[in-house]
Image (cartoon, rainbow, N blue to C red):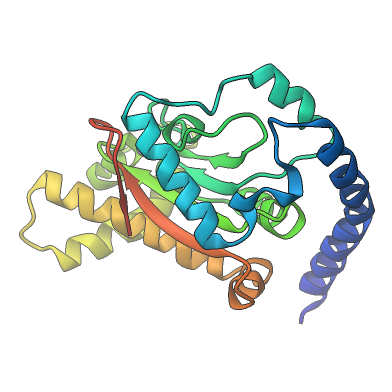
Length: 239
Ligand SMILES: [Zn+2]
């Protein structure tokens, strides 16, 4: 372990140690005072499989127009003010049409979210997802791309762009090139779909490069799964 990695690891351990006693206290009071937020005993947090089943069920409610996640939002806000027990972490595109709380029908305090265009993570996203899993105990990370993604289309077009956009696009380009090599005769829509799937898989591999996340996965406490959200009908394809 090099010095910077050792320092980061130590800092993370100290952070967890500092938070754990507070978690224990809040677990007790949450059980006493809240009905709308299940707290640390929430069965949806009992395993990665349980969390994934909860998200799939939530998406079915969303698609059926029977969402319940945002009922009593102010009650959930008050109940989760002292501590949070998210069911899962979601890492999604920043696109306004891909709100993960709506798509998975989860309310305040139930989903730990990072969003960036093209699902192109940076170190702060990595750290946030490490925190959401290792400290807050979410047993699932969903990396979610979507159809008709503007960031993916910009990476495919690969034209000059202003500001910080070239940096973002350059991070997506490897997935585009890999998808193009695997689909040399694809039309534009097929290439876009393939590149979007590849970008999600690339981000999953990237997250698995985090020792904090990898150790949880190896211990069976965490799963990292990919999905593509369909803007037209609200459905998900799980990768
Ligand atoms: Zn997008």
